[in-house]
Length: 145
Image (tube, rainbow, N blue to C red; front, side, top):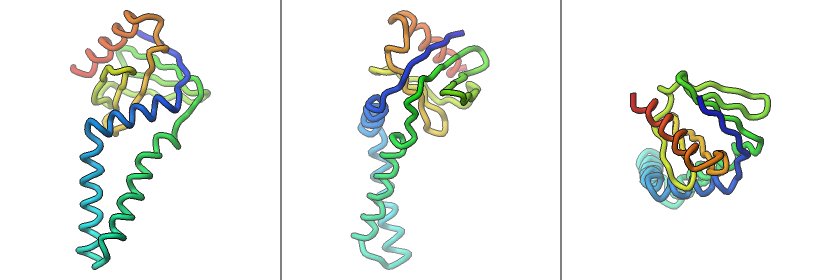
């Protein structure tokens, strides 16, 4: 069992989203723009400019969503054989291992759920580089089973 505690920073969430955008989200956003324009023009007979405006508005909402949903309270994360339990203030939630899709190691650890939500865990959450590595390996071993 591992237990970590940290207070997230809005900047970490923004950096995570920016990195995810350059890696893969740009493809989704490009498909979104083309799809919205195509649907708007083909089905409604509207103009490309109106479709583009609607598509860009949708992208802005997608980019702002993690910032709006950001919770600046201290977070406690416990991982064990059953899954991951998170506590923010008085709210707790348990996730089983089959709800997760991946863990990646960057400047921060990113544990991604299948619904594309993610836990962005900064290095300061760990007492040492070794405890971070142990945490990473523990989670990774439960995601590949």
